[in-house]
Structure formats: C-alpha cells, structure tokens
Image (cartoon, rainbow, N blue to C red; front, side):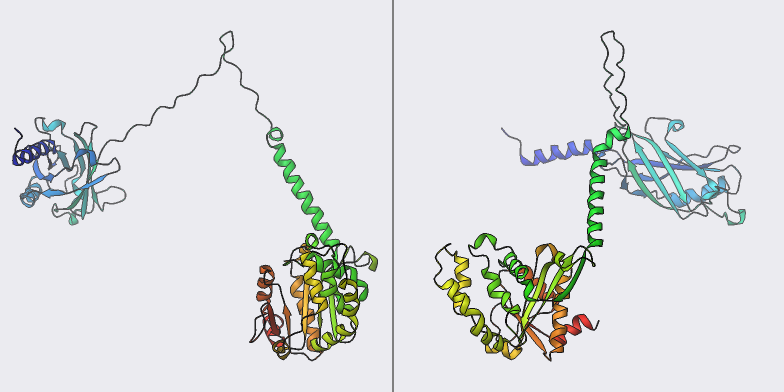
Length: 443
C-alpha cells in the first residue's frame, strides 16, 4: 500500500522545516564600566537562507527590527548618556542555552551613534553552520575615531542596518615539495651550476644580430641605390619585353605558360618605342649610384601609351604587325602553347578600341612594374608623370585595359581614382586629368 500524495507532501514539508536554520536573534545594549550593567534588548532577528548558499565573500540578508526598538533606544539614553567618556554600544548574537558572557559581541563607542546615519552588521559562520563572530560598524565616524562635540550628542538613532552573512574560507593547501635527490652516501646532490647569461640566451642573440645585419645591409643598399623615372627609348626594348613577360599572367610571371616568351612584349610593350609620333613612354630605372654609367641601369617598370589611339592602330597596322604576322603565321616549332595562341591571335587581328573608349579619350596607357618594386609608391609616381605629359599634349583624359583576373591591379587603379565609364568594355577604366589633379596634385 502506497502513502497518499497529501501525506508525502506533508512529510517533505516537515523535513524541509527541520532543515531550515533557525533565525538569529540580535541583541544590543549600552554599557559603561562605572555604571550598573544594562540588560540586553532585542535589536531584531535575521532570517537565514540555507547554509550552503552563504558565500565566503558575503551574502545579503534582512534584519527585521524589534517592535520595542524605539522604546529601548530612549531607555538607553536614560541609562547611559552618550556624552559620558567610556560609554560603549554593544551588539551580540543570542546563542540559546549559552550565557550572554560568551555570546559573539561587537562594540563601538556610544558617542559615535548619535551622529551616524547607517550601520552594517557582518555575521560569520563556522564550517558547522554556527554563527561564531559578529562585526558591527556605524558611519560616518570621525577619521581619528574621536567623539564629536557634546552638544551634537542628543540620542541613540534607529539605524538603517544592512546585514552580510559569510561562510568560512578554506585555508590554502600546503605546497608539497619534492625532496632533493641524494647521492649513494645519502648526501643531498649539489645542484648544477646556473648557466651564465650568454649560455642561456646565445641563440637569441645570434638571431637578433642576424636580423640587425640584414636590416643594415638593406639600408645601405637602399641609401646607395638611385631610383628615378626617365623617358623610354628603343634601347629599353629588352627590359620592356622582360617586364611585360614577368607581369603578363594577371600580374604574375608568364614564363611557365609560354614557349615563345617574347610574345607579351611584342604585343603590349615594344610597339610604343617603335611606332613614331603618336606614342609616349616612361621607365622606372634603378642603378647602384647616381654617378654610375648608364650601362649599370636596370629598368624595373614602365608606363607606355598613345596620344592618339586611332593613329596608333593605323601605324601599327602599317609597320608593326605585318613582320610579326609573317614570323608567327606559319610557326610550328616550338609548338605554341594556348597562351601563345592567344597573343598570336591578337597579332593576326589586333582588337581596335571601341568608339566609346575613343569618345572618353583618344589616349590610352599601359603600366607594369616588377613585383620587387610594387607597393612602394612607384606606380602612382609613374601614372603622375604620364598624366602631366598628357596634359601638356592637350589631353583631358586617358583610359586603360586590365585583365579582370588581376584583383591587385583593380584595387591599385581604384585607389588612384580610375573608374568605369558609360559603354566601357569589361576591364576598361578611365580617369580625367581634372580628377587626377583634384585627388593627387591639388591636395
């Protein structure tokens, strides 16, 4: 036979009631060593939560004040005047079955109570759950702890008292140490001598010295190296062709995709130093010293273009493409790669600029820089030289074509101010001289 649900709930309620801790009765009084002992009066009671919920850092609780508190405070004033030197206000925790002489007690000067506005009570619990100590404070009090002037001590106030409950903190665990190793004779072994600073950190010092040496060498090279921009000439053909090859695959080297590595330069670079009148070009040159002979120069970048794209198309059709068509038209060895075939197709039928491009500007440009000299500001300098040259020639804008796969180039042109324009084919960007000057020259 099973008990009814009502009986089960009743038993659970009784068990919980037995487990709930008893409230703490807080007593208080005012005493003076030269006056009769004042009896304790109840300040109030503190309802306790489950003991396991009390934190070592402090848990809040509520003090329910006694109904006789105000009468007790008046009686305290009659029994012990707060102006008397040596008067003390005591707060204690009532321990049933224990004489009040061993109650946990906290004491403050009675003269501090009349001028105070709040009080705080902290009750400490043992690991078994018994309250074993109490701390009582009132505020404000003078910094030196002295009593205020007697004319301000009128009566004992009923404070707004806050309560904090604290469980015991666990002591730190002892640190166990391994005993030192012993010799065969039972003597402690002497520790190994400590290494010197050099013995400890020599490998880091070598690494730091290596880095400093590399920085020093690089600095010397940079300081001694002279980099400048000059007009492109026919003598630059080999360098122009090499740079064009090294940047032909979306900004990366095209050496591995060509059996005829001269093709990129023959299509996109060399015409601009061979066709007369309508073309222009500038090269980025590096040489060891400004006083070094021209033979020591290294061309590391270029910007090339045409002032009149239609005139350029006509001139190349007359003088540049026919020899190349003869060279590559019946080519069999080495066998052209698919990338070679793309360039050969352009030679056989070079694509002309659209009317939209010509309407935007008759001028166009190309720019390529070796990877070792990219992201150092030289691209912007080359474009700046080109824009000033075009302005001197009376042009108001310029356009260029780029490989849509070259995301780095798209970002570069975007930063400089190049943009698409109405009717422009994919990969064609343009900028006006006014836009360039407003962005870079007039700042």
